Image 1 (cartoon, one colour):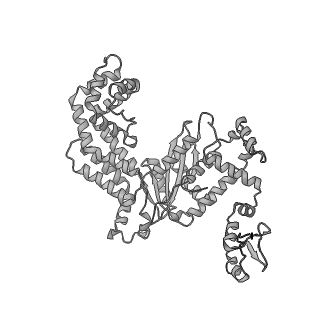
Image 2: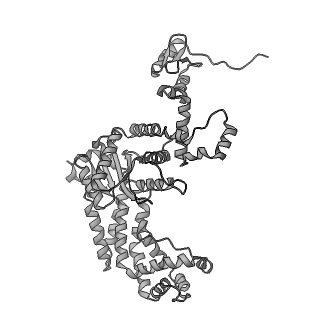
Image 3: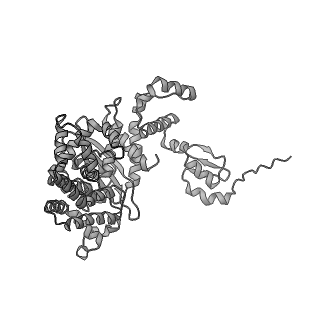
Length: 471
């Protein structure tokens, strides 16, 4: 029986000449296609075969001058860092036993060997970031945190501004600063832009918190970034408003603080006696609207919680006594109702701003909060509305952005009006940089408490980048 397997025919000369010019590394001598990088002829040389060869890992690493051993080590580092695994894993006997059982032909590198390749990995990720952000309008987000060792950590996040979609966030820098001053943060941002060969004229938006240091940073950078608007985080602004609400209702604040202490000790009794009542939220002052969330919880479940707390002897703990006094004061219930009716819109706004939304939706959320507060006639609301006005009026560039984006004729000569479409999916919150801080905290553990700054920054850059980009 004849073999019916089809044999792939090679294209004729004129067909090869049509597409061979698209591949700079390939040459056709009339007889065969030769790769000048790999120094060998291709077995199959249709257009698809040529593209497959040029895009292959072997060809790319040959072109970069890396050996197969180097290629393996780099890919191993990418995997370990992206999965947040320590290099010490390679030195553990059980891992080595497993490796030798299934991959005995390839020697496993040690921790010290891999660390010598870290600069190459960082350089590779920098190349990817440069190609993605180069010559595009930029949104920068900068914030500071204090880590467990009391170090001041400043992260710089970037997004390219696209008129048609929301782009992914990229970590450009994560540095420890001995003194977190406006000068040191400004220098860090400018050095970071220079490191990635990004122009200061590309920066259209700088987003920070509303603190005095970051306000000075924005003022300083405007001297170098002529097109830049300095905005403050709108969730942070709503936190300041929620803090004013907390100060206006001290009895409710005392109730929430003391009940937190009570639940810490008697949560098991609460679960048994009030099985149908949800557990209280963990209130951390006004962080992410948690204080408002706690106030709403005690309003909705007031009588169940009151029955539970009044059964205890007030002499058992000061927190129990203080909580019982507040539950026996009906004015506290009235205050809880007022907070729920008047300021539910603030918690709803914080929750909405946590999602990925357009600038139009963000502006609408802020306007809804202002209209709700402005329509209230409560005496204490005067201080809340006053705080909201102060926070918004301090952010003058946000007012300017609103007028530019709404097409106000009085801003027709504003140079940023030409970039109006790039603001369609502008983010007005610090959530991106907060997530990068979460990555920072996850890197450390009880078995990994100290890393060099270069290694730590590379871990963060890879993990943040790999969330939205295949490495």
